[in-house]
Amino acid sequence: MDSTKSEETVDCVVVGGGPAGMMAGLLLARQGVNVRVLEKHPDFLRDFRGDTIHPSTMKVMDELGIVGRFLNIPHRRMKTVAVSAPDGESVFADFSLLPEPYNYVAFMPQWDFLDFLAEEARAYPSFELIREAQVTELLIKGNQAHGVRYTTPHGEQTLTARLVIGADGRHSTVRTRAWLAPVESDAPMDVLWFRISRDDDQVPFVSVGSGFTIVAVDRGSYWQLAYCIPKGEYDHLRTYPTSVVADRIRQTIPNIAERFTQEIESWDDLKLLSVSVNHLKCWHRPGLLCIGDAAHAMSPAGGVGINLAIQDAVAASRMLGPGLAAGKTPTEALLRRVQKRRERPARIIQAGQVKILADLYPKHLDDTYKTPAAAKIVRRSRWLQKTAARVIGIGLRPERV
Image (cartoon, rainbow, N blue to C red; front, side, top):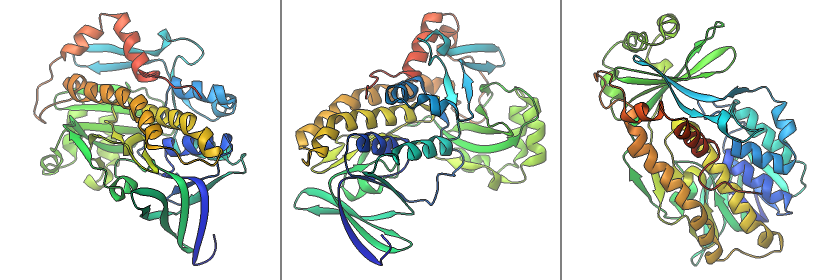
């Protein structure tokens, strides 16, 4: 791979080294599939990514015999999702009610998780992770995808393959090159990410108030915070000084508000995530399959996008791996079966995010806080708290390796 131009033939090329792509690469290599994972960045060190590892993902790693090594990586555990509001605290999901031993959500920087998967996959000689690989073209002959062309610091490279898996996220290049257009839904919010230093203080995981919802992730030496605002209101918010954010969150987390005024100097210190919720009507074409956010972009609510993406990878690898290892090209009927198995869980969760959970987020910046109807119901029912934990943590259709 050191020449200006080179060409290689493999069984499968996975575009995107996120959770779905790395898990697919690991599981396919484990079956003897000659697989290449293309990651456009030189490393996994990107902030403001989803850090949640769900019980279903830990169960998959348990089946693979690697969960012990995974749990040796520093992480934090959360047993309940509690929402702090002006009218008190509500438990929205109680993972402690799920079956042991994985009755919690683990928080781990996503780069540590991806590095772990990459290291485990390297144990298989048929696996290779290629970094700084920017896909520029989907190779198509007739109606059949048969590989990709990409660039690296060493020049232009070509990979031909029996199967291309698009796991390159909500802005998928593979999806675009395959002329697969997503159908958009109305996302309830946008997110401003920022970090604040941590000083042995405790902050609720979710806090809500007038015109905002804020999620706090404990990163040890600092808090990573997601300030959720009504969809499309960012430009209006920027007409005010950044102190408007501190003034709002002072209602529920005054210690963070004080540090915000000291550490946040301008709007440039906050990173906007324009949330999109969409799905492909068709996840595939001959020789190609999209999974994860490339097939169904999720709202960050609950971190369920990572869970669903990994479950997609598990199902796709289990259903397509044996044929690929035997030198066969997956049929369209088989690709259709993967979509049929994984589409309904994603669409149901998306409907919940857009219609049910939308009440948990403000509609306007100047909204006066009112207790959402969903919060009133869930806080009174341990059965609903367990059900929410199961949907978030295990999913509607958990997959086995």
